[in-house]
Every structure is written in structure tokens, then in C-alpha cells.
Length: 159
Image (cartoon, rainbow, N blue to C red; front, side, top):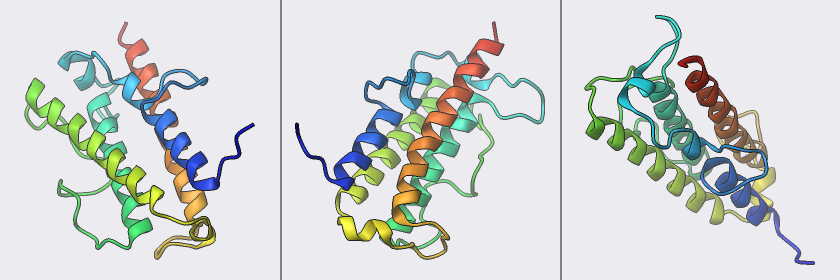
């Protein structure tokens, strides 16, 4: 039996919650695969988020976690604002693909940041956080799974 270290396990959780095959069902990337513009822009009501907004929200929080882990400065996210971003600004396949590309990039950069940590770094609290690096990394994986489920529900509500 192979012995895994904590960093390897966390990277595996990040990858399974985002785009690798997992036992729990649809991951975040799988939940947005093959959707039409109508599907990603649909809202259950005027004050609720659509799939596109949830997707960009997930990119933002991957950025925040990476920033906390690396000590990167505030304000370096590609988009202006925080947390949820109104979408669409421009209703086009290209705009959607650019936001999905942003999500992919934020995921890749987060995984690379986690790989650079040592096991002893996991017990440390990043600046501005009440939670350890371990809790923060595991939390962002759970965040992906939570929003994948939310997206699956939004898709089902449209039928």
C-alpha cells in the first residue's frame, strides 16, 4: 500500500473536486461542460445567481485562497470587484470561454501553490484568516463540490 503525504492528498482533493474523476459524482468543471448560453445565463429569479456568475465566483475564491497561501497582494485578480461578478456583461460564447479559461487558470495556479507548501506549512494560519492552511485548502475543494451541486440543481430547474 502506498503512503501519501498531506500535500499529495490535498492536491488530489483539489483535482477531484475540480476536474478529475471522483466517486462523489459531478465535479465543478464537469458541471459546466457543454452548456448553452441560455443555460448559463438563466436565473431562477431576478435576485439569484446564474451558472456563469457561480463559475466566476469559484475562480475568484481559488484566487483568494492562493493569495492567502502565497502572501500575494490584494487587488491582483483579473476582474474588478469581489466575490460575485455580474454576468453576462457581453453575452457571447467567447466571453463565456474567457471566464472558463480564467477558472482553469486560477485552479492551476492554486494547485501549483499548494504543491510548493511543506507539511509543516499546513498548520500555519495565513494572514487575514482564522483558519489554517490545511482548513483553507480543504475548504476550497469543498467549495468546488458545493457549487458543482448548485450548478447541477440550476440545470435541473431549467427543465
